[in-house]
Length: 237
Ligand code: CA
Image 1 (cartoon, rainbow, N blue to C red):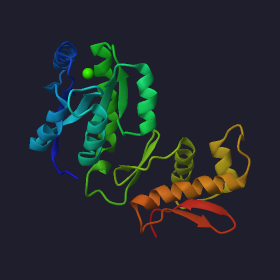
Image 2 (cartoon, rainbow, N blue to C red):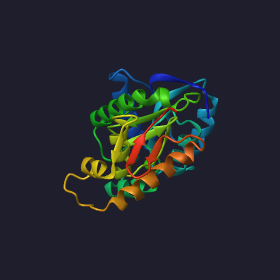
Image 3 (cartoon, protein in one colour):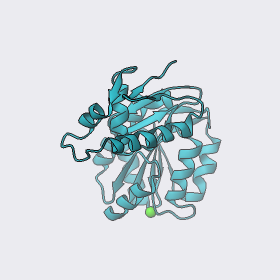
């Protein structure tokens, strides 16, 4: 994981269509952002490796000559997790597929777009990523953070990849650390319509949630089961 600093409001545009790149560059500049433009997929990783200060956000086109946007998104997410990524796609149907791949991009924008929309989305993503940034940095330890807008939970900055139900369960328990919730109470919080009525269902969701946390923290258990009663979130001993 890299310790490189981020340059605030600096955007890396990775786009092979010169017209689009110019349009976005100009609009960003008039909106108070600075940017750098690359038009070939193979140039991206070497360029990032060279930087002393990294762009805060990457605007990444999916279809590129050389290394494609999917590969780049995965590589950037893995090597520079503190960078926000917005992916650009040419087809709206692509977005569903991309979401399914769980690439870890912060947002997706479909072409054609207005530069105004792009800037608005960049601002929204930056607001969100700045709010969770200190937890994403290497060295921030033992922090479990909820990103309410993104329906994500981050353990030491790593996205746990929770389902909506798992996220809700965690949110309920984290709202009152140390408090024991019965399975029924958890169900009440999660399913307003009681679609799922079995207490076993709660157990199986909690089990998956705990496994996801254990993938990141092997030696630390924050969700405890209380025999015969239910569960609680207990970050400290
Ligand atoms: Ca393209």
